Length: 354
Length: 103
Image (cartoon, rainbow over all chains, first blue to last red; front, side, top):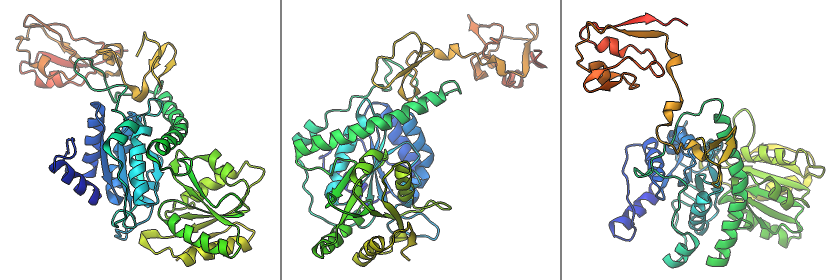
């Protein structure tokens, strides 16, 4: 399990500051199974994991989403073995992208906290009822200190009222959860899940907008966050903390008169195709930074960016950069070089920043 | 899953049946609607003369396909007996034999 989050939560519980039942288990497979069971009883359920732990959960991730249980989980993004590596990249959560969980990626500790609060609102929306992974970069976020504004209990309670499950396990009103789905119904339930992701696009935007009006902070429209994008011809696209590095490079290059900007992708599942197309309507070229690889294919974000634009009459030249695997540094220079490359080269390219 | 309108937020309907989200089944005992006896390849045949009414078969049947009333077992419920043969294996008195199911 991801270490710091449960350590701190156990302190809260021990100090009597947090009314919750903390369940200690022997593995991540059990952790997510316990969260599943707890959620089925109609209580708000949460866990946190990273890397191999998320991989070990994989089987049950599908069960949680298929049972439409709004569990929220923080994933401290880290590499998957082998070779053994504990450092940051996105291979763990990208490998879980088809498990039916909403995936939101965050750039700062503040955004991690705010997005985790929003995640419960999104997950528990009766039109959504999907589990949410809030993905934060391992080490660059999970193991650093940053000042964070912690909203007061009253404001959070107003933004996030009590969980009202559609169904719960209750001996007074018994239901069956997790039954067999024969071929005549299984596919219909999968279609319901897919439709719920369309609803999630709206629910994410709504949660983000209401968080702004009630708690004073927001992140783009909740799906994508622009930075100096209005007149940008050359656009950086990435997820998570790398966007903070990109902001510095963009500021520097703007001072030199270069029309550069950023589209931070916050929601990877659902993939906000319409929002992306709208955000990049003026872009000539895009540099997509992936901290993961779909082996035998391409960077997962890059593939989906290509897919989003494949039927568009006007599309930017989309370049792929595979970077930062297993904690390798992504420097200001890397991002500046990427901008210089996409300004100069008019053919799409794929580059590993080795 | 039947007999009700899909009133909840995300439920859908198909051929008059409500498909609740997450495949939740809201009417208890609905497994009676799903007759699983058709899976059977071997059929348990109960020899009443050898049977001592010890109820071991009733206790072990995983599908509750052996009924019991007032301490006496009844004929196997072939709507749900899958022919697993546990009753035959457990019967101490050889009162159950397995025969090939005829179609």
